[in-house]
Image 1 (tube, rainbow, N blue to C red):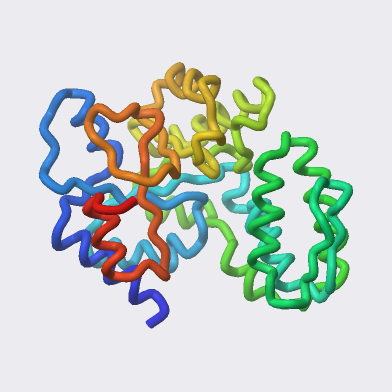
Image 2 (cartoon, helix red, strand yellow; image 1 turned 135 degrees about the vertical axis):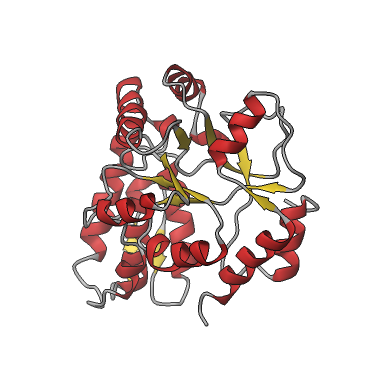
Length: 282
């Protein structure tokens, strides 16, 4: 089964950990209450459609709570997050080369099986750019690559986002909590004050109809992807906590606006999964 690793990971958490809602964990910490031994939290970023079609049935089967952080302006639309769209274009294009020297990079050969490496190089460059410069480069890449694509939808299907109806259906059972992940998945540290304010406040306002307490996750989530401005707005909104992608476990004294996480994928081996969850490695 293609989702067997994910199922095994959930079963392992069910057996050896006390899996709780993120909101409940943070409120217990705020109130000075003792958490159960081996407390764990399950989270998903972006709000991909497979959260509903794949993850939710397994979470229901095992009665495991989780929090999904939504890119609110893209939910219920055909839009793709820019990094996912770039990945799809690179893998599907028939174009043999792309010249990005005007953007401080080189000429990339797209016919040698090195598309993933190319994606990583271009993606890292884009993540470091300010909003307008990033969009200019993305527009150029899209124009260069989308003229000749393989014409398939296999990759696009993997990146489709949830509908609000699917969110409503998952919300009814109480097993899933929701968090804000900005409106359009912009890296917050690259935005001016007004844009940053809108991305956080508007996404939180959209999520506030679901949760008793607001939860947030930084897009991309590295230390350089958010700053004191973002944390100040989150505190003003009384957001309970915010998650990074910095790898590691959290103590009760951890800054609630810089919570760490453990990244798990379908290719994470069982031994590595156990070591990551235990904190032996990070």
